[in-house]
Image 1 (spheres, rainbow over the protein chains, first blue to last red):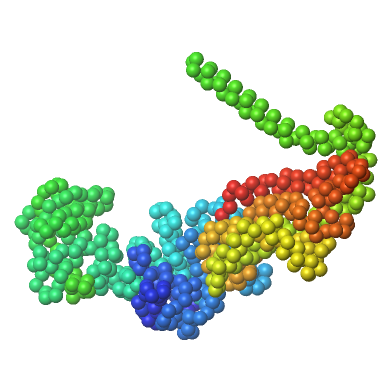
Image 2: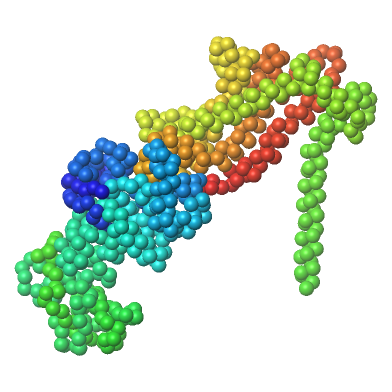
Length: 336
Length: 284
């Protein structure tokens, strides 16, 4: 159990700065998800906390102590890697026990701790097997077991679910959430999947080009994105952006108007605030996505319940939205 | 239908030809060994009197006992021990040194890392025969003539093996080293607990190749061992040939030849499974 504090953390590779100063105070037991597109520096940030990457400037504090110069093992952390990084020649038991063996833990305690972790992760029948004899989901569990047995004060996850198929990913996502709740260990979790970020995080950090664009609770970030990038990245399908001029927005400085697909209502031609042409529709079962083209060529999407009548493809329609649902962004993509 | 029978006939014919080719080739290779085996089971007089016998005689135990116990210059049993020490020393020494140097080159950033790698790589171009005179000087200077260390150390550095392990280590995912670091393993613990067990098939394959390389060394032992008790078996066979008009004890020489073949055969056959696996896949 520990707090983690990042204080204007920066990282450069040679002359290129890839992380331009990230600050965050993480409470004890909090689940923080770092989310962003590939190349935004989210993994590098995590690896700096782990001690696998040196810190160029700024501070990493774990439980109040600056750990910049400490080896990973002295930071009281455990890490789950994207490709699991299990030792291929060792049994599941030995994989989980290796860190404890090195630390010189008494044998009886190792057995007890590994058994507890195995029970928690339903790995008991597989303790004697090699990693290559396990399925992807089981390997994933072993990687988590290896982290759990060390009883660290911080868990670090580096895209742990991205090698699994979609169905398993949903299942493991829930398991990770439950596990973290039960153990109450402070966690940092890196992902490029905004759904994982939304569902797992107590608070999330949205990274864009080495900068933390926004830090906040998932629903707050969703409802109130700080930048155009965040609005576009969080949510699926993404937020629609309409030119401020076309939407007849009065606010000075506003360059774009962002509207979530679910806030956009398709009405009959001439009845809405904007006119558009229906290009094609996707019926997903519970809901239907209507893709439309505006007069200036911009493509936007409306999400409506499947029970609502669907406009025919090629027809001219009107679009409506509530003023409180419109999000205005200035030239630089900042909220205004 | 006609086509099909034609195909079958053709294939049958091809099959026969392939086998015939293989059998003839095999006989070519095997015949000299057969002659040596026959010659090691008859008496000196039988060999001298043409035509040479082609079927084994009944002096097998007598000839082999003579070779093993007394030999001509030195007992062959003793020469086999020398060869065994030399071959094992070279094989194990080469493996240990090349594992460690490959580990250093792949996992550590030290000044001159690339330079050292290329220096090691360059030595590939300098086989024993090329550097034999200066090497002899050095070994003589250290007083290592007629000793096991003199037989082993000059042949122990291996660019090939270093290169092979380097290539293998580079295929090991970086995350494995990082996971070990997070687990608290020191570099040497990572080497011993993770890299070494993962390279075991490569080690086995190399052991087979290097053991045979060491066992078959001829020129180097010939140069630095003058004392018959330090002779290795491969060069010892040559030493058994008489100089001048002395008559050669062919049955004993042939028995020695057969004996010289046995250990490499045992190593190859015994480690065949591991050996092939080491060459074919890297088992990640």
